Length: 157
Image 1 (cartoon, rainbow, N blue to C red):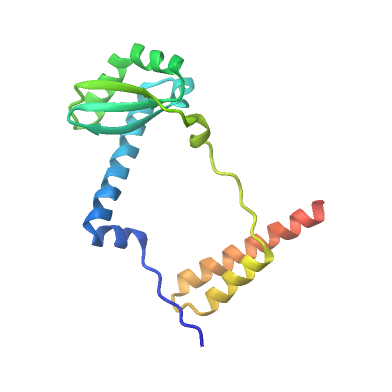
Image 2: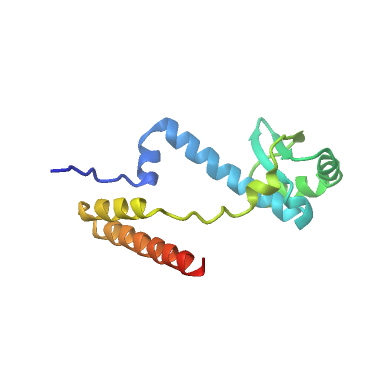
């Protein structure tokens, strides 16, 4: 007889561990900072910038190209004003760092992943052994959708 463990909600897990809790809070803060930054920039500039972190009054912004770094520096007063009015943080300085990774690619939605027949069967087998009705239904729904997408791909080929 196979034993199944009851999954723990990630939110609960992160709140139980101080280290995870700190990472969780930092991640949420970075997300909020990126939203404020995005509100201060044009769409074309938004796609090439990302807040790395805020520490000791310094906001570190990553850009993916030196040209965008210059544009961020030109908009520094708009950025400072947005942070002054929309957050409780006192941003004293903005540092711009050119990041080698392509931020614009990272902000694009992830590609759709197709599940193999073996994976679909594994999901269904796992769902059978789970007591939590909500999770069981979610896994069954996932497997059903994946199976229909697999069938659609085969019929279109």
